[in-house]
Image (cartoon, rainbow, N blue to C red; front, top):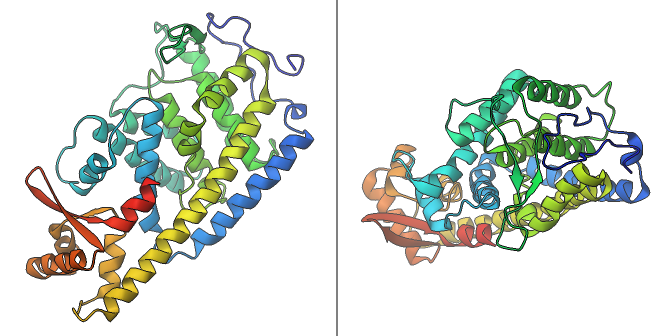
Length: 375
């Protein structure tokens, strides 16, 4: 395999000779990869078709993207609870702290990066820098020449702390490798590779370049989502691979190391294609479950003897985020304060919502949405 791909001979030495893209087609044109590619494309297309007919796609971007932000951050050992995260998201006007703050930055990067690509049309250096800066809330940019960066084995096992990979060193080299990656992403005439394979190849390349001091993993996972929407494989960024990666963390890291040390592209590409297939199916089912329970609750509210004004808009709103406050409904202009409070309390009586007091403030939890997102 190394005859087709120049591997990194010494994990302690900066890999300044990362092979430029594209990789040799013999590395991905195998029966096993092409069969799994078919499965992944079918699952993604089914999700695309389902999401395209959702009346309010933003509803799912709000809810599902919060879980993606939480799980992607957990891969980097940044942990927060669902309650802490949803409370922080609900309290948009107040400054969240700690892990919740970092998780919400990831979510904001999902939005800002998506907006950037819609306005600019293609990937460039500024896209990656902007996503990284949003995640880390920094003005830092490409790693400077003097920085000695190594990737070490995590955990507490016997190999914990050992160097497993050393990314390229020197801003000019990093920029050169990043520019090659960007050309590979944008030029679909010169680089005629299926988009899912292209995404998986580019994801490895980005992580191998490791262009920033920190936040490369989260930046790369945001890029994965945006690549799918940029190429028209999804209308909105709702396919999030972090759950699969977290559940298969050892395979994820061994896949990355396998390419750099052994040229094992097959293992990495199969891992990514399985991630796309599994996540597409999971998201498809989650969307169906949310839509089903939302419609059922709306039907119950319409039939209930307690009359609700604008029930469709009310139910639409409480499914836009797990925690709702009285002021949220007031800010939309939907209801006055007393009406908003009365309706939320009535939904509690119907066991649709649960009233919670956190830090002296009252929140209304959408019980079913919370359950579905937490599964």
